[in-house]
Length: 306
Image (tube, rainbow, N blue to C red):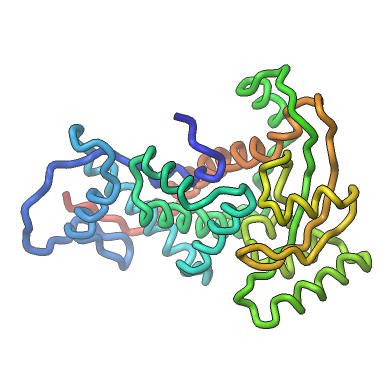
């Protein structure tokens, strides 16, 4: 089954199949990664968490290799003082849920289909975000996706004659409710946006939706029913290049800019452009990080003891 766009993660952290249960043993070191050891109990816990099919035996060395890759990334991030808390991860995921009008039941159902625990789901998101922050620094914007690549992917994976209803492309700035004087701050940002300050720059500076702030608050194209009612109603009443807000949702206060509208019957490439761009970007990130990690490994002390 094709995974939804929001489920895309850096593919080095692979979900493997299961290994028969092992009896308890005295603590043992199975690998050393620079100044970090991996114990047998850690490896066994990893195997337990990534179990998908108990009937198939797992390749233990592949699981260990994935752990080593993750530790190397953690070490590289720590050296550059890059980090993210569990609270930040959950806030980012929640923002994505709200933007796509997904409830907890929909997420739970998808996790069930993927045989994935909630803990592993959030851990993969955390790994993705940490990796993205690290790669943003390492690549310095050298990874890009062209319009030609997007159109080619669309031709190969979507029906060329697909058409949809009216689509609206929007960007937003989110001020979390937990922020002190959140509403007042949202109103101040709204005034800056209406006064002519570049919306994208304001999003990068003030938005607490980290996943969209990096792209100037861009959320993408939506059709009726995609967004939560509060935001959808405001968007419907706002002209192209107009700004609405603050719009209150369960997460906080949104300042929304309508970037463009496409009428019914236009090509579906516009609806899926941002989604395809994200998919292609992550594929390029995966290739880059694989090559980059190989270079890191050459300059690291790695000893495998199993």
